Image (cartoon, rainbow, N blue to C red; front, side, top):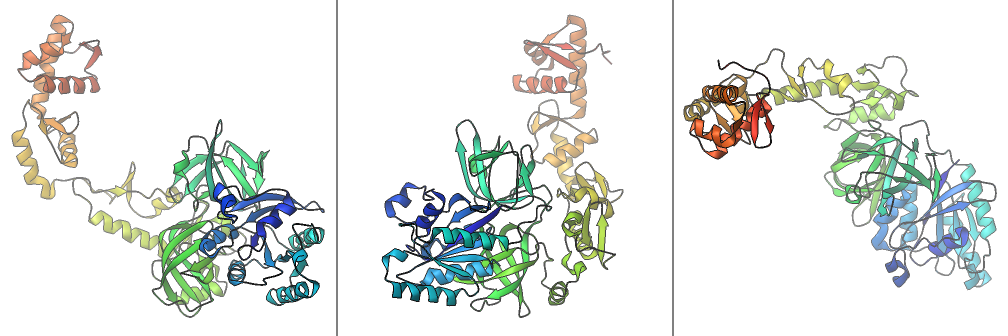
Length: 557
């Protein structure tokens, strides 16, 4: 079963050296990292254990300035490798990294006490004892990346910890959080990240969220090895043809279309390291994203996080909350909750009331293991499940927008979400193309009547600029003007007079030039050009070189 292990620990405690000793790969890839001798960004390496277990290793920076980068790497791991220098013992980032690991719900791992060859036996024993007290019920191994001492035992303990991990849900929709985007010659844009759930394979059609960018997977690699399909729980690289490198960024997720909500709100069960006040402004770390947010407390143990940009979350996901330091974290109770925090609803969710966890549409696939019977207040439409309260809120929101719509076109754009095809028919509105209208609603001039009269008084054979495109369309649909080019118009009578002149000349001479048409009407060259282009578009004429001929024989009347 593929799994991912992430390092944790204070700067200069030997994380990168240990990963190199275990895997043979230097995870410091940036020139600046080699120049400064510290890790700045996330590093990656494969680790094959003696029992056949395959681990993807994520090496994180230990400097306090890069804790946000550490969280981005730790968010997708299955087990931890906490690294503590035998000579220094636990230091500030040791404690903060360990707190983050715990907030992320990662309870399996190993502690490596490094540089064991650089201290005496008594100091080493004190360091081992401190590590056991710091992380109870976790294997602690003394190692030396320099001499290789303890590496075999460390591999064995990692294998044992991996056996205790449940693994990732392969039967849920695909979700890969992007941590790197780059281009390769002959391949194009490549995105890498830890596959949180599902499978990704060649030819898959996915979406990059937030952003609603459709992408197609051309090829898949796992640690530089091509595979046809990759399951969750490991590092994955996908090539995405037709996507520019700047179109993707760390923090986005590649997901199966419609598989997860994209929401500006998260309801979470809180775990606090320091008190978090109602209204506090902080940063929410979720997946590889870091999102500014405002906290709205819901009772003593929960909060609604109101995000400045949307998250791609699922129930049960873990988030880390940081200000200048790590303040706490939370478990996602609802990834797309109502706008108003509701303490009673949170209590129902924590009691296991499935209906309370459903607000905006969720795929049946995501809930089939818990949704049984007919929970009260829940609607089903096709493959979607949602609350009646959400449906009513959507209906009221659309009704308000329809009340405010321009009377020239009293419709509003229909929702474009994956659930729209199933849900929109339940709303009681009339769909016309991409828009929704109240049943029987029709366009009317209303407050535009005076503007329409003023415009029509100006219209003749010489094109007039019309600033209000909706008004021009309305009047044209009612035969009161004809639009030309980009924002110009003439009267319907002038259009018909020009058409008759054109047809008569073409029937007499067989064809007509722009100059001849201009002279017959006594108008300017630009006006004649616009009219001829409109006649071409209407199917009256066909252009051949610099001349026009009739598409079909017409009478002069």
